[in-house]
Image (cartoon, rainbow, N blue to C red; front, side):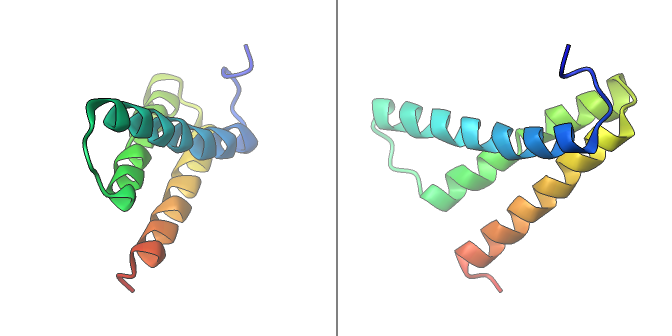
Length: 88
């Protein structure tokens, strides 16, 4: 299976795709429920879904390269969120 590889590229791709998918799901859910949540808060919450992916690859499978890829992209997303929010 393609997800059972120890590859930095796989980690980067997963780190990019997982938050986008969960942000999209949140947007649909919150619009359906009629909640008004700030977009930057939704992005930060979606970013936290990289944690289970990171943990699965680092602890359960012992795939260090894939875990490092997920962690690297998570930090990049976090820096982008900080600059987008205007904190720095």
